[in-house]
Length: 168
Image 1 (cartoon, one colour):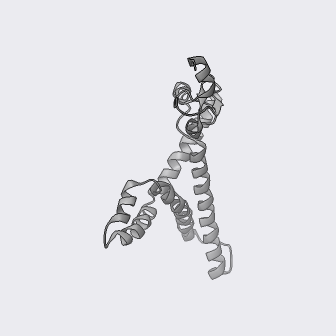
Image 2 (spheres, rainbow, N blue to C red):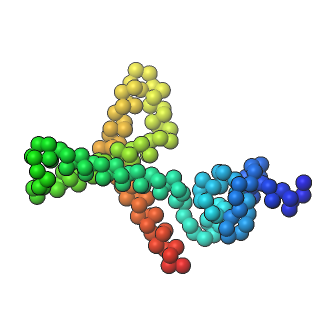
Image 3 (cartoon, rainbow, N blue to C red):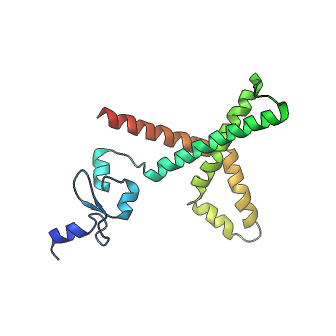
């Protein structure tokens, strides 16, 4: 099979994988692995067009973290209604409202941060203390609010990329 025929059937980046779609910019073939990064552009065009690294999965992560933050706020209002029998919020309760939103986001954010973490997988293999560390580590990560800042970073980056694309 010649080069031109092979280009019609195989991915331009991963030459052993079959073509699934063509790049909208250059027409190069893309396989499923390339489509994970961006649904319309090949890896070379992503760099050339400065589209960033935000895939559909990362946008989905931000969406789920935002939903979990909203659930945290709803739990706060449920708690307020259950124990105070009203939806009125005292000025001192705004901090609790903010905390419930941040913790709601941090719970899903912890999952997204730790799902591919090698350290977390190594904790599970430790004898005697591995199980305890496996439980304690996500709790500490959640309470550190690092996942909240992970959410903010991704949210602002996605917004910046979408605004900068519209200005082009």
